[in-house]
Length: 321
Image 1: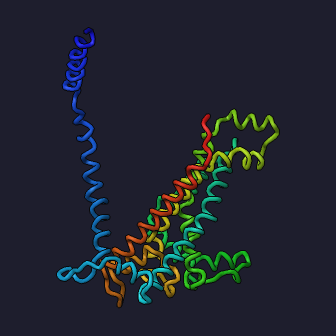
Image 2: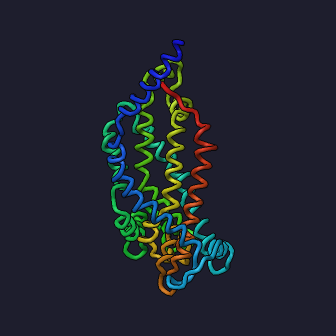
Image 3: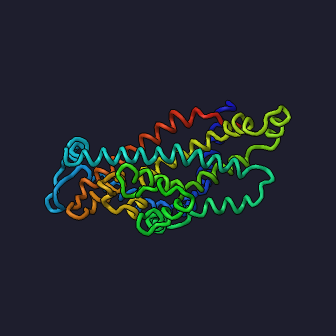
């Protein structure tokens, strides 16, 4: 009997509470500008790129092609050689950053985090400064430095008796992409250095002091204490470097031109996309094949990032203090 009396009262209170709950319009209002800009500048162009990849022909006579453009890009001899060459060069370009830039950045961060190091702020600024320079300036300056005709590199090597080591690195097929990779490492090593340095500063002093009490100092402390705590940060740096390298375009374009010479030896996916989409010299631009290259780049980056996040990043041990 009591339940029959109380039940309508409870429902009435719940309905009153729901009716008086304020609608949070401010969330939609605050998110609307960002969502609008993101939709117009990112989502819609990306969707249009995917759509173009499945069509062919001129704008007034466009027809659905299914996966034909992807089959041409991967298997047709007119396109496959350029695509696989650009993909292999992109992998090599990323490998240089993975094997050189990230270890160098961690080493610099470890040196800068040494207690009592003088002028550490000056060193950090000097290492990070190339990151703030325009890629146009970087490409042009390094072309001048490495030029065998008027560059300063032959003169500097000759001053120390090493002139025999000089090579026109940007002019030889076997050296051009590697030279560009090291230039890119020099320009961007400041970013992973700062991230690693911040991660090292976040290690509690009590942990390091306890290690010193146990006699773990110097290199042993770095490899047994600091480096294991840095692995999650290094993982994030690695995946960000991969995404950046596979979307890279500017340095190769400014230093070697749209043909990524010599003889396409420094051609990466970014320059292939530009040349396919807009054309270059005798090659006419093809928006459908350009969209196909862009879609392939997106899928490659998406698969690697998802694989890394699901199979690598989740297994890295994180410590909370």
